[in-house]
Amino acid sequence: MKTKFWMLVGLVIAIAIDGGSVFANGGEGKVLKYGGRIEIASDEYIDFSSEINPILFLVNSMHGRYKVVEIKIKNWSKKKLSLSKESDKVAFDSNRIEGILDLAKHDPTLWDSMKPELREVLAYPQSILPNNEKNVYVFIPIDRMSEGPPGLIRYSFDSLPGKDATIGVLNKAMKK
Image 1 (cartoon, one colour):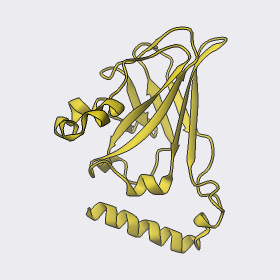
Image 2 (cartoon, rainbow, N blue to C red; image 1 turned 30 degrees about the horizontal axis):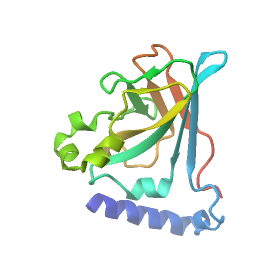
Image 3 (cartoon, helix red, strand yellow; image 1 turned 90 degrees about the vertical axis):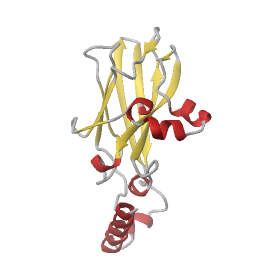
Image 4 (cartoon, rainbow, N blue to C red; image 1 turned 135 degrees about the horizontal axis):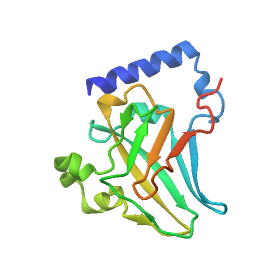
């Protein structure tokens, strides 16, 4: 609770120093849009996208323990993309921060406290069929990611060795 308070104080100070211009642009540029792609073959690929509101990222957390990043994965290949919550990896900001794909294993008390419907949505999927998409939820321990949204996301799959996705910011948030 104390951390959220100080982050909110910092945000208010930043807005005061900035003169409020973050809110003066009619809503443009407030959301960071991320994108990336893995080429599988000449006409087959896997697309990645995410959107993060920097202000909401700073003030929101899951039970005060985790930041949550949603990554949409679109499988435009002819084969099923097999996923592994044990072996796949998501890292933020030049591999400095490792994301958690299996919250049930990492924090069973929190996982068990959730309603079954929520656990079903947040659980790491086993696969993505061809020409389909799924959302993946990556959990970041709050003490490792308190300064703001990540600049870069690296996603690696056990089923695609050597074909990591680099998911970067496509736009700048809070432009002046």
